[in-house]
Length: 377
Image (tube, rainbow, N blue to C red; front, side, top):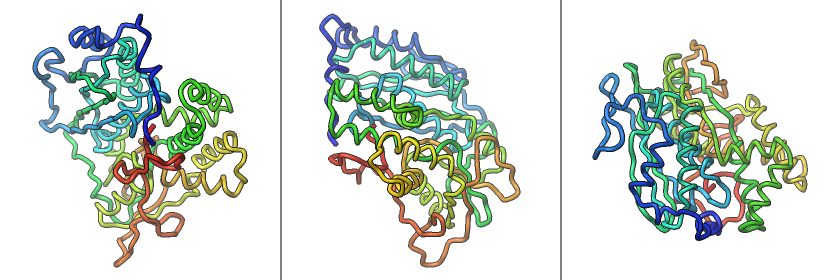
């Protein structure tokens, strides 16, 4: 689906101070005044490069792009929402290696007519998100550029603290499969936003989103989780210390990411949706309030599918030895089994083999008017 019209968000009235009028040096000063410095920073922003202390000599690094259109819509998301989404997706990747996030860099490509106040709100959103998700992590640098399309690029760094990284490839038969965070919330929120976007644009869309949230806490919860997810970045380190053998961030959907973990480890995974009941109920309640035209059977089936394939919840999927005590924040959702010779599927859900399905930016049909999986928020 092409990006919705966001002229009201991006092209403010002439009286509004824009980034084109502000200039790079002043805009950078305003941003740095609002974001926390990295505690691990030996030399922070201001020179040609920053210097980051590297704990035991190894550094965990990940990077992620958010591009207006396929990854977010200004008509749907506030600047604070985008900051939270960018932080959650990157901090979760660091946590998935069993590391503690220490610093991020932020690169922005901004249309010249973007309001400076919007960029200041984005910076404040980064500060809030880092305080909540990874209090020891701060901003150590970045870059500013101009573009006809808004782009947010984050690079995140993490410290293993002397421990070993937890790869995707270490799961073994007999391990318990566990998940942190919710499943299906973000996918459900996206599904409802897509349904709304079929019929509304511009101010009508903004009013529609407000009306959608007003349908009850269940609807607001899934919409808000999609637009502005949150994570506890300390859970990755907790999982490593509890003996996790394999781990990854669930960004592209539980089924697709479980398939990746299974294939990397050379095993087969069994997922039991009966232990995902609270997630199914949360999604079902949102669908019931927002889409009363669905009958109970249709709605329940859709809720289960969203929990299994919906992306961008940013929980952690991990395998633990059977003897391990799962850390707080994780719940068992299945088991690890030996790979079956010749089996086409690496994952079974409720005993049934399932093909890998989830968010793939290169396979996504952006002209689709509705979806139960994926990104493009």
